Length: 529
Image (cartoon, rainbow, N blue to C red; front, side, top):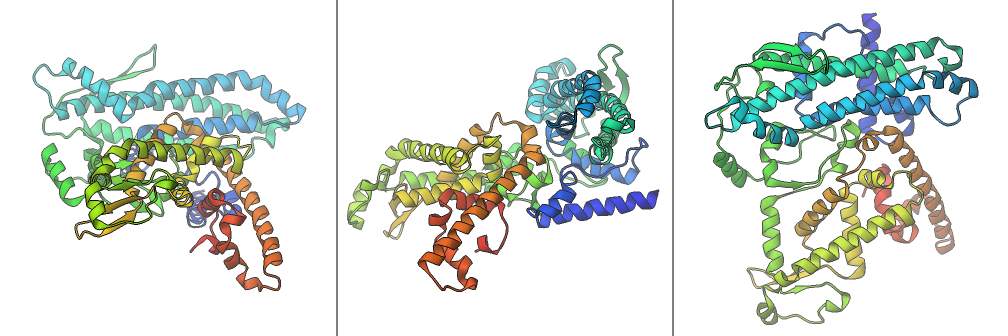
Protein backbone atom coordinates (compact mmCIF):
# COMPACT_ATOMS: atom_id res chain seq x y z
CA UNK A 1 0.00 0.00 0.00
CA UNK A 2 2.81 2.39 0.90
CA UNK A 3 4.56 1.57 -2.38
CA UNK A 4 1.40 2.42 -4.31
CA UNK A 5 1.03 5.75 -2.49
CA UNK A 6 4.67 6.62 -3.15
CA UNK A 7 4.30 5.71 -6.82
CA UNK A 8 1.17 7.84 -7.08
CA UNK A 9 2.93 10.76 -5.41
CA UNK A 10 5.88 10.48 -7.80
CA UNK A 11 3.53 10.39 -10.78
CA UNK A 12 1.73 13.51 -9.57
CA UNK A 13 5.02 15.34 -9.04
CA UNK A 14 6.08 14.29 -12.53
CA UNK A 15 2.84 15.63 -13.99
CA UNK A 16 3.28 18.91 -12.11
CA UNK A 17 6.81 19.27 -13.42
CA UNK A 18 5.61 18.70 -16.98
CA UNK A 19 2.72 21.11 -16.71
CA UNK A 20 5.05 23.83 -15.40
CA UNK A 21 7.76 23.27 -18.01
CA UNK A 22 5.31 22.76 -20.92
CA UNK A 23 2.21 24.57 -19.67
CA UNK A 24 0.22 24.58 -22.90
CA UNK A 25 0.53 21.04 -24.22
CA UNK A 26 -2.97 19.69 -23.98
CA UNK A 27 -1.99 16.05 -23.51
CA UNK A 28 0.02 17.01 -20.43
CA UNK A 29 -2.79 19.20 -19.15
CA UNK A 30 -5.35 16.46 -19.59
CA UNK A 31 -3.34 14.17 -17.31
CA UNK A 32 -2.41 16.83 -14.78
CA UNK A 33 -5.39 19.20 -14.76
CA UNK A 34 -6.30 18.80 -11.13
CA UNK A 35 -2.72 18.02 -10.06
CA UNK A 36 -1.74 21.52 -11.20
CA UNK A 37 -3.89 23.09 -8.52
CA UNK A 38 -4.79 20.33 -6.05
CA UNK A 39 -1.77 18.45 -4.73
CA UNK A 40 -1.82 14.68 -4.16
CA UNK A 41 -3.00 13.29 -0.84
CA UNK A 42 -4.29 10.25 1.00
CA UNK A 43 -7.77 10.02 2.38
CA UNK A 44 -6.82 8.52 5.71
CA UNK A 45 -7.13 10.75 8.75
CA UNK A 46 -3.94 9.97 10.65
CA UNK A 47 -1.78 12.91 11.70
CA UNK A 48 0.99 13.93 9.31
CA UNK A 49 4.57 13.04 10.17
CA UNK A 50 6.56 15.65 12.07
CA UNK A 51 8.80 16.52 9.12
CA UNK A 52 5.73 17.87 7.29
CA UNK A 53 5.12 20.58 9.92
CA UNK A 54 7.68 23.01 8.48
CA UNK A 55 6.15 22.71 5.02
CA UNK A 56 2.68 23.30 6.45
CA UNK A 57 3.85 26.42 8.29
CA UNK A 58 5.50 27.75 5.12
CA UNK A 59 2.24 27.15 3.26
CA UNK A 60 0.43 29.59 5.56
CA UNK A 61 2.89 32.40 4.92
CA UNK A 62 0.80 32.99 1.81
CA UNK A 63 -2.48 34.91 2.17
CA UNK A 64 -4.80 32.60 4.09
CA UNK A 65 -7.77 33.27 1.83
CA UNK A 66 -5.72 31.86 -1.07
CA UNK A 67 -4.38 28.90 0.89
CA UNK A 68 -7.89 27.78 1.86
CA UNK A 69 -9.72 28.78 -1.30
CA UNK A 70 -9.42 25.21 -2.71
CA UNK A 71 -12.23 24.27 -0.32
CA UNK A 72 -14.57 26.50 -2.30
CA UNK A 73 -13.07 25.81 -5.73
CA UNK A 74 -13.29 22.06 -5.18
CA UNK A 75 -16.88 22.26 -3.97
CA UNK A 76 -17.78 24.20 -7.10
CA UNK A 77 -16.05 21.66 -9.32
CA UNK A 78 -18.03 18.86 -7.70
CA UNK A 79 -21.25 20.76 -8.28
CA UNK A 80 -20.28 21.31 -11.93
CA UNK A 81 -19.66 17.58 -12.35
CA UNK A 82 -22.87 16.42 -10.64
CA UNK A 83 -25.16 18.98 -12.21
CA UNK A 84 -23.59 19.20 -15.65
CA UNK A 85 -26.03 19.73 -18.55
CA UNK A 86 -26.69 16.70 -20.72
CA UNK A 87 -26.83 14.05 -18.00
CA UNK A 88 -29.00 11.03 -18.66
CA UNK A 89 -32.46 11.18 -17.11
CA UNK A 90 -31.78 8.27 -14.74
CA UNK A 91 -28.56 9.86 -13.48
CA UNK A 92 -30.17 13.26 -13.03
CA UNK A 93 -33.06 11.70 -11.13
CA UNK A 94 -30.73 10.07 -8.59
CA UNK A 95 -28.66 13.24 -8.15
CA UNK A 96 -31.78 15.33 -7.53
CA UNK A 97 -32.85 13.01 -4.70
CA UNK A 98 -29.73 14.03 -2.78
CA UNK A 99 -29.27 17.55 -4.17
CA UNK A 100 -30.84 19.35 -1.22
CA UNK A 101 -28.40 17.88 1.31
CA UNK A 102 -25.41 18.45 -0.97
CA UNK A 103 -26.28 22.09 -1.69
CA UNK A 104 -26.97 22.68 2.01
CA UNK A 105 -23.48 21.40 2.89
CA UNK A 106 -21.78 23.48 0.22
CA UNK A 107 -23.71 26.59 1.25
CA UNK A 108 -22.54 25.98 4.82
CA UNK A 109 -18.95 25.65 3.58
CA UNK A 110 -19.19 28.92 1.68
CA UNK A 111 -20.65 30.69 4.69
CA UNK A 112 -17.88 29.37 6.95
CA UNK A 113 -15.27 30.57 4.45
CA UNK A 114 -16.78 34.07 4.41
CA UNK A 115 -17.19 34.29 8.19
CA UNK A 116 -13.86 32.82 9.31
CA UNK A 117 -11.36 32.84 6.44
CA UNK A 118 -12.10 36.12 4.68
CA UNK A 119 -12.11 37.92 8.04
CA UNK A 120 -8.72 36.34 8.82
CA UNK A 121 -7.12 38.09 5.83
CA UNK A 122 -4.21 40.23 6.98
CA UNK A 123 -5.69 43.68 6.35
CA UNK A 124 -9.06 42.83 7.90
CA UNK A 125 -7.48 41.12 10.90
CA UNK A 126 -5.15 44.08 11.50
CA UNK A 127 -8.15 46.41 11.76
CA UNK A 128 -9.91 44.02 14.15
CA UNK A 129 -6.81 43.60 16.33
CA UNK A 130 -6.21 47.35 16.46
CA UNK A 131 -9.75 47.84 17.76
CA UNK A 132 -9.53 45.02 20.30
CA UNK A 133 -6.00 45.50 21.66
CA UNK A 134 -7.23 47.71 24.53
CA UNK A 135 -9.29 44.80 25.84
CA UNK A 136 -6.08 42.86 26.48
CA UNK A 137 -3.58 45.61 27.34
CA UNK A 138 -4.38 48.51 29.64
CA UNK A 139 -1.03 50.26 29.23
CA UNK A 140 0.51 51.73 26.09
CA UNK A 141 0.60 49.21 23.26
CA UNK A 142 2.92 48.67 20.32
CA UNK A 143 3.01 46.55 17.19
CA UNK A 144 3.89 43.32 19.00
CA UNK A 145 0.84 43.65 21.24
CA UNK A 146 -1.37 44.17 18.18
CA UNK A 147 0.27 41.15 16.54
CA UNK A 148 -0.45 39.13 19.68
CA UNK A 149 -4.16 39.84 19.29
CA UNK A 150 -3.94 39.13 15.56
CA UNK A 151 -2.41 35.69 16.08
CA UNK A 152 -4.92 34.85 18.79
CA UNK A 153 -7.86 35.71 16.54
CA UNK A 154 -6.17 34.12 13.53
CA UNK A 155 -5.82 30.83 15.36
CA UNK A 156 -9.43 30.92 16.56
CA UNK A 157 -10.86 31.68 13.13
CA UNK A 158 -8.81 29.14 11.17
CA UNK A 159 -9.27 26.44 13.83
CA UNK A 160 -13.04 26.99 13.68
CA UNK A 161 -13.10 26.89 9.89
CA UNK A 162 -10.94 23.78 9.72
CA UNK A 163 -13.17 21.83 12.10
CA UNK A 164 -16.37 22.98 10.42
CA UNK A 165 -15.01 22.15 6.97
CA UNK A 166 -13.84 18.74 8.19
CA UNK A 167 -17.42 17.92 9.23
CA UNK A 168 -18.89 19.25 5.99
CA UNK A 169 -16.47 17.32 3.79
CA UNK A 170 -17.19 14.18 5.82
CA UNK A 171 -20.85 14.54 4.79
CA UNK A 172 -19.91 15.15 1.16
CA UNK A 173 -17.61 12.11 1.20
CA UNK A 174 -20.48 9.93 2.43
CA UNK A 175 -22.71 11.23 -0.34
CA UNK A 176 -20.09 10.52 -3.02
CA UNK A 177 -19.66 7.03 -1.55
CA UNK A 178 -23.40 6.53 -1.95
CA UNK A 179 -23.30 7.65 -5.58
CA UNK A 180 -20.38 5.29 -6.24
CA UNK A 181 -22.50 2.22 -5.46
CA UNK A 182 -25.62 3.32 -7.37
CA UNK A 183 -25.61 2.04 -10.94
CA UNK A 184 -26.93 5.26 -12.51
CA UNK A 185 -24.31 7.51 -10.88
CA UNK A 186 -21.33 5.18 -10.56
CA UNK A 187 -19.59 6.38 -13.72
CA UNK A 188 -20.35 10.05 -13.02
CA UNK A 189 -18.48 10.11 -9.70
CA UNK A 190 -15.59 7.93 -10.81
CA UNK A 191 -12.36 9.76 -10.01
CA UNK A 192 -13.95 12.31 -7.66
CA UNK A 193 -12.33 10.72 -4.61
CA UNK A 194 -8.75 10.77 -5.90
CA UNK A 195 -9.02 13.98 -7.91
CA UNK A 196 -11.02 16.17 -5.52
CA UNK A 197 -11.77 14.65 -2.12
CA UNK A 198 -8.32 13.37 -1.19
CA UNK A 199 -6.57 16.70 -1.90
CA UNK A 200 -9.09 18.50 0.31
CA UNK A 201 -8.37 16.02 3.12
CA UNK A 202 -4.68 16.73 2.71
CA UNK A 203 -5.35 20.46 3.00
CA UNK A 204 -7.35 19.86 6.18
CA UNK A 205 -4.47 17.85 7.65
CA UNK A 206 -1.92 20.48 6.62
CA UNK A 207 -4.06 23.14 8.28
CA UNK A 208 -4.29 21.04 11.44
CA UNK A 209 -0.51 20.57 11.44
CA UNK A 210 0.04 24.32 11.01
CA UNK A 211 -2.42 25.09 13.82
CA UNK A 212 -0.59 22.64 16.06
CA UNK A 213 2.69 24.45 15.43
CA UNK A 214 1.05 27.83 16.07
CA UNK A 215 -0.60 26.48 19.26
CA UNK A 216 2.81 25.51 20.64
CA UNK A 217 4.52 28.71 19.49
CA UNK A 218 2.10 31.12 21.15
CA UNK A 219 1.85 28.82 24.22
CA UNK A 220 -1.91 28.37 24.44
CA UNK A 221 -3.08 27.62 27.98
CA UNK A 222 -6.56 26.39 27.16
CA UNK A 223 -8.75 25.80 24.11
CA UNK A 224 -12.55 25.66 24.21
CA UNK A 225 -15.25 25.07 21.62
CA UNK A 226 -18.65 26.72 21.90
CA UNK A 227 -21.24 23.96 21.94
CA UNK A 228 -23.79 26.15 20.12
CA UNK A 229 -21.81 28.03 17.45
CA UNK A 230 -18.94 25.56 17.08
CA UNK A 231 -16.47 28.45 17.36
CA UNK A 232 -13.13 28.04 19.12
CA UNK A 233 -11.67 30.33 21.79
CA UNK A 234 -8.22 30.12 23.38
CA UNK A 235 -6.62 31.51 26.53
CA UNK A 236 -2.96 32.51 26.46
CA UNK A 237 -0.57 34.90 28.17
CA UNK A 238 1.46 37.63 26.51
CA UNK A 239 5.25 37.20 26.53
CA UNK A 240 7.22 40.29 25.51
CA UNK A 241 10.12 38.05 24.41
CA UNK A 242 7.98 36.34 21.74
CA UNK A 243 7.60 37.87 18.29
CA UNK A 244 3.96 37.27 17.43
CA UNK A 245 4.15 36.85 13.65
CA UNK A 246 3.85 33.90 11.31
CA UNK A 247 7.26 34.78 9.89
CA UNK A 248 8.82 34.29 13.33
CA UNK A 249 6.99 30.96 13.68
CA UNK A 250 8.42 29.84 10.34
CA UNK A 251 12.02 30.63 11.27
CA UNK A 252 14.26 27.62 11.99
CA UNK A 253 14.77 27.05 15.71
CA UNK A 254 17.81 28.84 17.05
CA UNK A 255 17.94 31.33 14.22
CA UNK A 256 18.66 34.78 15.57
CA UNK A 257 17.27 37.82 13.89
CA UNK A 258 17.63 41.35 15.10
CA UNK A 259 14.41 43.26 15.38
CA UNK A 260 14.39 46.29 13.16
CA UNK A 261 12.62 49.57 13.72
CA UNK A 262 10.54 51.02 10.93
CA UNK A 263 13.22 53.64 10.39
CA UNK A 264 15.91 51.01 9.96
CA UNK A 265 13.82 49.03 7.51
CA UNK A 266 13.09 52.16 5.51
CA UNK A 267 16.78 53.06 5.38
CA UNK A 268 17.60 49.59 4.06
CA UNK A 269 14.85 49.90 1.45
CA UNK A 270 16.23 53.21 0.24
CA UNK A 271 19.76 51.85 0.04
CA UNK A 272 19.12 48.51 -1.58
CA UNK A 273 16.00 49.25 -3.61
CA UNK A 274 13.28 46.69 -4.29
CA UNK A 275 14.17 43.00 -4.50
CA UNK A 276 13.84 41.17 -7.75
CA UNK A 277 10.76 39.00 -8.22
CA UNK A 278 11.28 35.71 -6.44
CA UNK A 279 10.60 32.93 -8.93
CA UNK A 280 10.79 29.17 -8.48
CA UNK A 281 9.87 27.13 -11.54
CA UNK A 282 8.23 30.34 -12.85
CA UNK A 283 6.03 30.57 -9.73
CA UNK A 284 6.02 33.87 -7.84
CA UNK A 285 6.77 33.15 -4.21
CA UNK A 286 5.86 35.45 -1.33
CA UNK A 287 9.19 35.45 0.49
CA UNK A 288 9.87 37.20 3.77
CA UNK A 289 12.21 39.65 2.03
CA UNK A 290 9.49 40.44 -0.45
CA UNK A 291 7.04 41.24 2.34
CA UNK A 292 9.57 43.52 4.03
CA UNK A 293 10.17 45.44 0.81
CA UNK A 294 6.54 45.53 -0.29
CA UNK A 295 6.24 49.14 0.87
CA UNK A 296 8.91 50.10 -1.68
CA UNK A 297 7.01 48.59 -4.62
CA UNK A 298 3.94 49.35 -6.66
CA UNK A 299 2.58 46.05 -7.95
CA UNK A 300 -0.54 44.47 -9.38
CA UNK A 301 -2.22 42.00 -7.01
CA UNK A 302 -1.72 38.33 -7.93
CA UNK A 303 -5.14 36.84 -7.30
CA UNK A 304 -4.62 33.18 -8.22
CA UNK A 305 -3.86 30.55 -5.61
CA UNK A 306 -2.50 27.84 -7.95
CA UNK A 307 1.00 27.33 -9.27
CA UNK A 308 -0.17 27.81 -12.86
CA UNK A 309 -1.78 31.22 -12.21
CA UNK A 310 1.00 32.78 -10.15
CA UNK A 311 3.67 32.99 -12.86
CA UNK A 312 5.55 36.00 -14.26
CA UNK A 313 2.70 36.54 -16.71
CA UNK A 314 0.51 37.74 -13.83
CA UNK A 315 3.11 40.06 -12.28
CA UNK A 316 3.99 43.69 -12.86
CA UNK A 317 5.79 45.89 -10.37
CA UNK A 318 7.91 49.03 -10.18
CA UNK A 319 10.01 50.48 -7.40
CA UNK A 320 8.53 53.49 -5.66
CA UNK A 321 11.80 55.37 -6.13
CA UNK A 322 11.92 54.53 -9.84
CA UNK A 323 8.40 55.89 -10.19
CA UNK A 324 9.34 59.10 -8.37
CA UNK A 325 12.34 59.56 -10.64
CA UNK A 326 10.26 58.86 -13.73
CA UNK A 327 7.57 61.29 -12.60
CA UNK A 328 10.13 64.05 -12.11
CA UNK A 329 11.57 63.38 -15.57
CA UNK A 330 8.06 63.62 -17.04
CA UNK A 331 7.39 66.90 -15.26
CA UNK A 332 10.75 68.18 -16.48
CA UNK A 333 9.83 67.51 -20.15
CA UNK A 334 9.47 70.39 -22.58
CA UNK A 335 6.98 68.62 -24.88
CA UNK A 336 4.33 65.94 -24.31
CA UNK A 337 2.66 64.56 -27.43
CA UNK A 338 -1.03 64.07 -26.70
CA UNK A 339 -2.17 64.32 -30.36
CA UNK A 340 -0.40 63.46 -33.62
CA UNK A 341 -0.34 67.13 -34.57
CA UNK A 342 1.74 67.84 -31.45
CA UNK A 343 4.71 66.09 -33.04
CA UNK A 344 7.41 68.74 -33.63
CA UNK A 345 8.76 69.48 -37.09
CA UNK A 346 12.08 70.74 -35.74
CA UNK A 347 13.75 71.02 -32.35
CA UNK A 348 16.64 73.01 -30.93
CA UNK A 349 18.28 72.81 -27.49
CA UNK A 350 17.70 76.52 -26.93
CA UNK A 351 13.99 76.20 -27.69
CA UNK A 352 13.79 73.13 -25.49
CA UNK A 353 15.35 74.96 -22.55
CA UNK A 354 12.72 77.68 -22.79
CA UNK A 355 9.86 75.17 -22.45
CA UNK A 356 11.60 72.89 -19.99
CA UNK A 357 9.32 71.89 -17.11
CA UNK A 358 6.07 72.21 -19.03
CA UNK A 359 5.42 68.47 -18.69
CA UNK A 360 3.94 69.01 -15.22
CA UNK A 361 0.96 70.87 -16.68
CA UNK A 362 0.21 67.92 -19.00
CA UNK A 363 0.38 65.14 -16.42
CA UNK A 364 -3.36 64.87 -15.80
CA UNK A 365 -4.12 64.89 -19.52
CA UNK A 366 -1.49 62.21 -20.11
CA UNK A 367 -2.99 59.95 -17.44
CA UNK A 368 -6.41 60.42 -19.05
CA UNK A 369 -4.95 59.51 -22.45
CA UNK A 370 -3.37 56.28 -21.17
CA UNK A 371 -6.50 55.22 -19.29
CA UNK A 372 -8.65 55.96 -22.35
CA UNK A 373 -6.48 53.74 -24.53
CA UNK A 374 -6.44 51.00 -21.88
CA UNK A 375 -10.24 51.00 -21.80
CA UNK A 376 -10.54 51.02 -25.60
CA UNK A 377 -7.99 48.30 -26.30
CA UNK A 378 -9.09 45.91 -23.57
CA UNK A 379 -12.74 46.37 -24.56
CA UNK A 380 -11.79 45.52 -28.14
CA UNK A 381 -9.89 42.42 -26.92
CA UNK A 382 -12.92 40.90 -25.20
CA UNK A 383 -15.53 41.97 -27.77
CA UNK A 384 -14.13 42.33 -31.28
CA UNK A 385 -11.05 40.06 -31.02
CA UNK A 386 -12.47 37.23 -28.92
CA UNK A 387 -16.27 37.60 -28.89
CA UNK A 388 -18.61 35.34 -26.96
CA UNK A 389 -16.35 34.78 -23.95
CA UNK A 390 -18.19 33.22 -21.01
CA UNK A 391 -16.03 35.13 -18.50
CA UNK A 392 -14.43 38.05 -20.37
CA UNK A 393 -12.81 39.66 -17.32
CA UNK A 394 -11.27 36.33 -16.28
CA UNK A 395 -9.83 35.98 -19.80
CA UNK A 396 -8.40 39.51 -19.56
CA UNK A 397 -6.90 38.76 -16.15
CA UNK A 398 -5.23 35.59 -17.43
CA UNK A 399 -3.84 37.55 -20.40
CA UNK A 400 -1.90 39.52 -17.81
CA UNK A 401 -0.67 43.09 -17.35
CA UNK A 402 2.41 42.59 -19.53
CA UNK A 403 0.29 41.74 -22.56
CA UNK A 404 -1.82 44.85 -21.99
CA UNK A 405 1.34 46.95 -21.55
CA UNK A 406 2.81 45.76 -24.87
CA UNK A 407 -0.49 46.42 -26.62
CA UNK A 408 -0.59 49.88 -25.07
CA UNK A 409 2.94 50.82 -26.18
CA UNK A 410 2.33 49.43 -29.69
CA UNK A 411 -0.89 51.44 -29.93
CA UNK A 412 0.88 54.64 -28.91
CA UNK A 413 3.50 54.06 -31.60
CA UNK A 414 0.84 53.23 -34.17
CA UNK A 415 -1.08 56.43 -33.40
CA UNK A 416 2.11 58.50 -33.15
CA UNK A 417 1.24 59.83 -29.70
CA UNK A 418 2.32 59.44 -26.08
CA UNK A 419 6.02 60.18 -26.45
CA UNK A 420 7.76 62.78 -24.32
CA UNK A 421 10.63 65.10 -25.20
CA UNK A 422 13.08 66.31 -22.58
CA UNK A 423 16.57 67.69 -22.41
CA UNK A 424 19.09 65.77 -20.33
CA UNK A 425 22.08 66.89 -18.23
CA UNK A 426 24.29 66.91 -21.31
CA UNK A 427 21.85 69.27 -23.06
CA UNK A 428 20.87 66.48 -25.44
CA UNK A 429 17.26 66.18 -26.57
CA UNK A 430 15.74 62.81 -25.66
CA UNK A 431 12.53 61.38 -27.09
CA UNK A 432 11.02 58.46 -25.21
CA UNK A 433 7.93 56.84 -23.80
CA UNK A 434 7.77 57.35 -20.01
CA UNK A 435 7.47 53.61 -19.41
CA UNK A 436 7.72 53.76 -15.62
CA UNK A 437 4.90 56.28 -15.43
CA UNK A 438 2.86 54.23 -17.91
CA UNK A 439 3.38 51.08 -15.83
CA UNK A 440 2.26 52.93 -12.70
CA UNK A 441 -0.94 54.09 -14.46
CA UNK A 442 -1.51 50.52 -15.68
CA UNK A 443 -0.96 49.04 -12.21
CA UNK A 444 -3.58 51.38 -10.71
CA UNK A 445 -5.99 50.72 -13.59
CA UNK A 446 -5.44 46.95 -13.33
CA UNK A 447 -5.96 46.90 -9.55
CA UNK A 448 -9.25 48.76 -9.84
CA UNK A 449 -10.42 46.75 -12.86
CA UNK A 450 -10.08 43.41 -11.05
CA UNK A 451 -11.01 44.52 -7.54
CA UNK A 452 -14.25 42.51 -7.60
CA UNK A 453 -13.28 39.66 -9.94
CA UNK A 454 -14.54 36.20 -9.02
CA UNK A 455 -11.54 34.51 -7.38
CA UNK A 456 -13.04 31.05 -7.86
CA UNK A 457 -13.22 31.62 -11.62
CA UNK A 458 -9.58 32.77 -11.61
CA UNK A 459 -8.69 29.44 -9.98
CA UNK A 460 -10.94 27.36 -12.24
CA UNK A 461 -8.71 25.33 -14.51
CA UNK A 462 -11.78 24.26 -16.47
CA UNK A 463 -12.47 27.89 -17.41
CA UNK A 464 -8.79 28.46 -18.21
CA UNK A 465 -8.44 25.35 -20.41
CA UNK A 466 -11.58 26.20 -22.38
CA UNK A 467 -10.24 29.70 -22.99
CA UNK A 468 -6.92 28.26 -24.09
CA UNK A 469 -8.59 25.94 -26.58
CA UNK A 470 -10.56 28.87 -28.01
CA UNK A 471 -7.31 30.80 -28.46
CA UNK A 472 -5.70 27.80 -30.18
CA UNK A 473 -8.59 27.52 -32.64
CA UNK A 474 -8.43 31.21 -33.47
CA UNK A 475 -4.68 31.01 -34.01
CA UNK A 476 -4.96 28.01 -36.31
CA UNK A 477 -7.59 29.76 -38.43
CA UNK A 478 -5.55 32.97 -38.76
CA UNK A 479 -2.32 31.08 -39.36
CA UNK A 480 -3.98 29.21 -42.24
CA UNK A 481 -5.10 32.54 -43.65
CA UNK A 482 -1.53 33.81 -43.39
CA UNK A 483 -0.28 30.80 -45.34
CA UNK A 484 -2.79 31.56 -48.12
CA UNK A 485 -1.77 35.22 -48.15
CA UNK A 486 1.85 34.26 -48.59
CA UNK A 487 1.03 31.91 -51.46
CA UNK A 488 -0.59 34.83 -53.28
CA UNK A 489 2.02 37.46 -52.45
CA UNK A 490 5.11 35.24 -52.58
CA UNK A 491 4.34 32.32 -54.90
CA UNK A 492 6.95 29.61 -54.92
CA UNK A 493 8.32 30.62 -51.51
CA UNK A 494 10.00 27.86 -49.53
CA UNK A 495 8.29 26.20 -46.59
CA UNK A 496 11.21 26.90 -44.25
CA UNK A 497 10.73 30.66 -44.62
CA UNK A 498 6.99 30.50 -43.98
CA UNK A 499 7.05 31.34 -40.25
CA UNK A 500 9.54 34.13 -40.86
CA UNK A 501 7.23 35.72 -43.46
CA UNK A 502 4.23 35.39 -41.13
CA UNK A 503 6.18 37.00 -38.29
CA UNK A 504 7.10 39.96 -40.48
CA UNK A 505 3.45 40.37 -41.44
CA UNK A 506 2.00 39.50 -38.05
CA UNK A 507 -0.04 42.67 -37.60
CA UNK A 508 -1.71 42.18 -40.99
CA UNK A 509 -2.47 38.53 -40.30
CA UNK A 510 -3.29 38.44 -36.61
CA UNK A 511 -3.80 42.05 -35.63
CA UNK A 512 -1.81 43.82 -32.96
CA UNK A 513 -3.86 42.69 -29.97
CA UNK A 514 -4.40 39.08 -31.01
CA UNK A 515 -0.73 38.67 -31.75
CA UNK A 516 0.19 39.63 -28.19
CA UNK A 517 -2.46 37.26 -26.80
CA UNK A 518 -1.10 34.40 -28.94
CA UNK A 519 2.40 35.26 -27.81
CA UNK A 520 1.27 35.01 -24.19
CA UNK A 521 -0.61 31.73 -24.36
CA UNK A 522 0.97 29.70 -27.16
CA UNK A 523 4.52 28.48 -26.71
CA UNK A 524 6.54 27.57 -29.78
CA UNK A 525 9.37 28.85 -31.93
CA UNK A 526 7.17 31.18 -33.94
CA UNK A 527 6.58 33.46 -30.96
CA UNK A 528 10.01 33.17 -29.37
CA UNK A 529 12.07 35.95 -30.88
